[in-house]
Length: 397
Image 1 (spheres, rainbow, N blue to C red):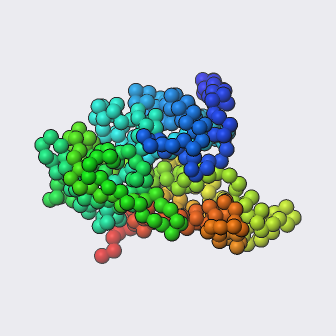
Image 2: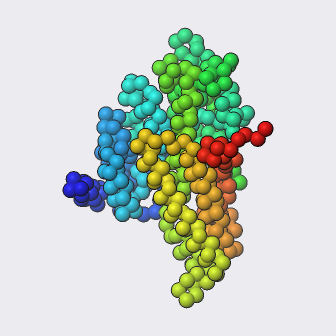
């Protein structure tokens, strides 16, 4: 215990000295640091914060030191997290590489691939996107048709992906491809390649919120070096399933990014717009629904933490990630709807005078949240997983 308390004291002192003041404020959307070769630092302190945290490996604190991580144990990682929260410190890096790709590379990649790709993820030098869903293979992902042919000294990729988050900004992609057309699951492989490769094209997809992270992505005779296939050819489905667990766990844990804009609580916002009577929110019905939402969110956060600790201990948490992903989508949709409802007509703004930036952002966030039940695995698919693998229900015949 003494060692942990020493680590806490040293960590607290280091963070107090090295975390810039502006990095202790609620995140502003255009200041989120995704890293990569095209990163633009709107706030210069964001660059300082990233560099300082990455130098200690604390953008991926529990990853092994030999791959650029912080090498922290479980208890130390919890302490670091709590000290960052104590300061209200912003995340120095938002990264699909940290959240999804890195953990599966450590499990499935060879040593050369680990040393080549992992340190750059930790440093924020490479921004990754995910090439999974296709126009004809979303819920039934294993039906994907993007072809990957063995041309002797390279792979040749042809096909397309859809709903590829931030593909138009990414440096590299981790992609599911079909190396054997005669088999379904056993014909899928997992490859990594540069998005600047000849034959790669991206087209953003506009959502009703007015913007979108999603893209259509097209591959036409894209040549990929042979050493960028992870694992064995035809064994990509195992990697894909494992990565989906990390994806659902992480997007759920971060509330679909809502934690990046932490500020006034839902209750505080409602009081500002609805008013207070006898020290509590004046609208009793809205007060009850907001209280219920906040209790659910607290219980959910504890469930996510328990699930993450079980995963680190080596437990199979596959079905649990489907429960968490479904619940996270529902919670975020309900939260954004309650916020807009509390604002009344001020929550209906889209643009122009008469509306504050936060009000317009709330309107767009509510509309954006409608996609939460689709991205990272649709709610219907996740409910099917729960029905079969958790409740043991039989398929309908």
